[in-house]
Figure 1 (cartoon, rainbow, N blue to C red):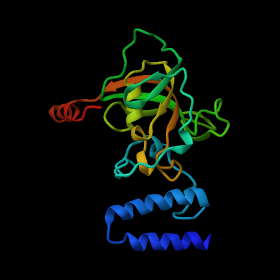
Figure 2 (spheres, rainbow, N blue to C red; figure 1 turned 90 degrees about the horizontal axis):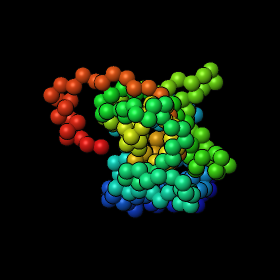
Figure 3 (cartoon, one colour; figure 1 turned 60 degrees about the vertical axis):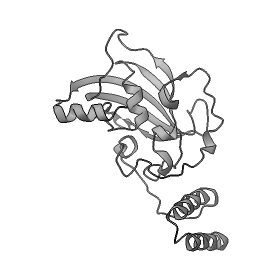
Figure 4 (cartoon, one colour; figure 1 turned 30 degrees about the horizontal axis):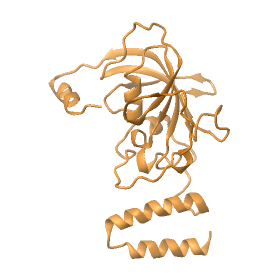
Length: 222
């Protein structure tokens, strides 16, 4: 690796060793530098399980004070997309099987098919990168989760609760409704906009809601 980069890393960490916020800034700066220069900061992770991408565990939710600029996605064309809540963009690719069917409720089990892309959709951007999918080499296994209770990224919860069975959408999820400044699993950089092909394939049972669960839903709106 470049000796200049190594020297810069050492100096930054020394200068910021007594200031927690500055140290955080230095770490994020070094992560960005690594993407540009090839500097190795952490081991390369060869694979990430599906739930590491879609599930919103506490370790993957962005909690830092700094959001990195999403330069790679700054010029994405969103013509033809509808405005969803909180910066979401979506386009209905396939209408629902029954337009009069209900949408999921919070705390209801659902199943969905999906493919996750970075840098846009492949028919629009040839540099788009597929990161994860419910479709594997031996068929497709829909992903099951409980809607609207934080088991998945916020962008999914907000989208699925507005869909009906059989409906397929393309959604563009801004970083703050995805994995935030920290990214996920070593394969999704911090600040990434997420591009999903998402289909709602099944509504399942409602969760059994007691007073504690009802209180949680009331205290934690989407």
